[in-house]
Image (cartoon, rainbow, N blue to C red; front, side, top):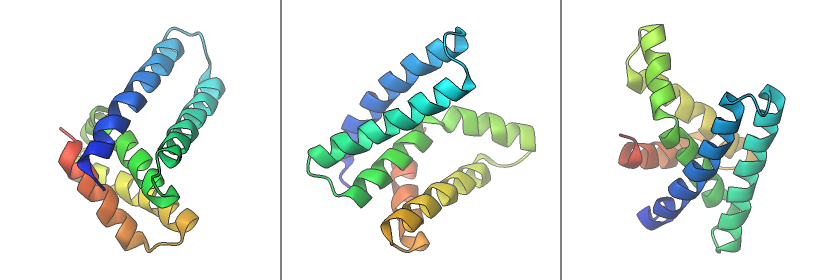
Length: 125
């Protein structure tokens, strides 16, 4: 995946996700509403990428990877709470995302793990 693609996806996703998180934290939406809005946000990002000429599978990889990159601080907290290295928790998240991509798009899980891991390694702080 080209670096430029995620350079566009990350800010778009981050801005919209931040808006929803602020509404959730302010009590303006509940857990179910947040989950539905988050799912819709991811679908919108996927559709936007498809409209830009990105294949469905590459769009799914980009969206999953972008979510993981944006979730690094939460993964750090989870790692600390579980007494694990960040890399362990991060890899579990990558594998879960890769399972979804592999199941949905008929590629091997190993290929999906490699693709998502490469993006996360490049962009995560």
